[in-house]
Every structure is written in C-alpha cells, then in structure tokens.
Amino acid sequence: RVQLSNINADQLLTKEPLPYMKFIIQSSDVYNLKAEELLAAGPNSTYITIESGLVNDMNGNSIVPILANESKRVDGYEKDEIDPFLIEYSSLDMDEGIITLLFSEPIDSDTITF
Image 1: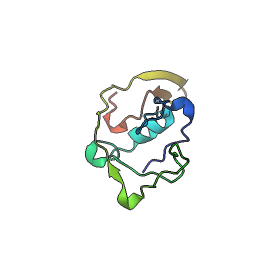
Image 2: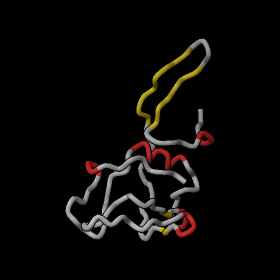
Image 3: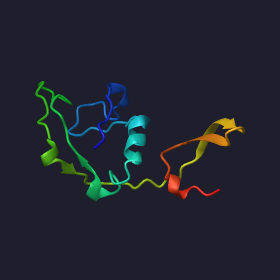
Image 4: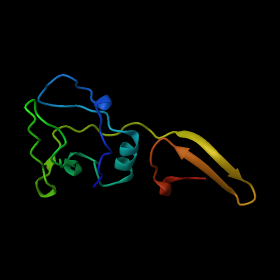
C-alpha cells in the first residue's frame, strides 16, 4: 500500500467542474509505487481506496470513502515502458572502492552486471 502525498490544486489537470478528476502524481509517489514490485504491476494489482475529505461536490458534500476492504480495481492501466537512466554519480571513493549512482527510478540490484 502506498499513500499518495498531499495533492493540491496546482496538480489537477481538470480545473472545471467535471464528474472525474485527473491529477499529476508527485515524483516521490511514483518512485514509491515503482519500488513496490507487486504493487501497481498490472490491472490485477492496482486498486484505490479513498478517505473522506478527499474532495467535495459543488454543494460541499464530502466524497463517500472507499475503505480498504472495498477497494476499487483500476479500469485502465498503462504499463511502465520507460527505461531507467543514470542521472548522476555523486561520489567515487577509491580507497573503499565505492561509487554512488543515482538512477531515474528504482532499479533491481540483482540485474546489475559489472
């Protein structure tokens, strides 16, 4: 289970009153989702729960919560097809033989070949 960080109005892609909303997931949340191998790996492992207070309708009524035992499975799912890339290497310690690499997303350390 990954809880998304606070979503604010700047992240909403739908500004006018509509019966749906699209918003940008913060990169830290995307990172946390990708780090969980079995979570959001496909439509059968992608569900949502909603706490009351997430959003109100035009009359101020709060959304009906969706509890964990009633979570909803996603209707549409797009698989991650972007390859990870090296952003930077931040340190090289020749005495210890250690290099620190920063990648664009979580990587499977078992797949590193030297």
